[in-house]
Length: 164
Image (cartoon, rainbow, N blue to C red):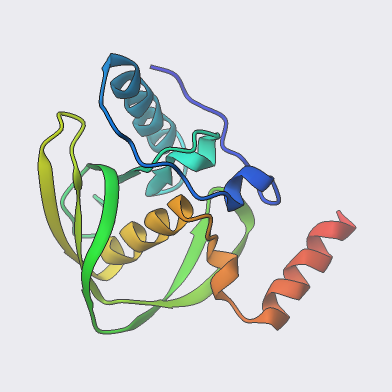
C-alpha cells in the first residue's frame, strides 16, 4: 500500500466529473487500498479518487472514532438516493487545506453503491457521517465545498490564496 499525493485547489482535475467504474479488478482493489491508506495518513475523514488524480467514482469515508458512524465505508459509483432534513456544519477539505466554512447539507442520506467485491450496498447515515458522504460524492461531480459557500467568502479566500 502507498500513500498518494492529494491534489490541492486550484488543480483543474478537481473540477472534472469522474467516470463510472465499469468493472473491479485487482488493480482497482489495489488503488482502493492506497486510497484508504492515504485517508488514514491524513487529518481527514474521507477521500475521493479525484483528489488523488484518479477520475473514477470511488470514495472512502471513516468518521469514527470521533463521531458515531459505520466505520470504514468504501463505495464505488455512490449515489444519494434519498435525503432528509437540513444541517449546517463546519467543513474543511484535504484539497483546500487553508479554509473551513459552514455548509448546509442534508441531515440524513441514503446512499447506494457497490463494494470493492462488487456487491450492491445501501447505507443510511446521519449527522457528521452524512455530511462526509455528501462532501465526498460532490468531489466525484467536480464540486468542491468552496463552491457551496457565498460568493463573498469564496472571493476573499481566492484573494488570500493569490497573495501567498
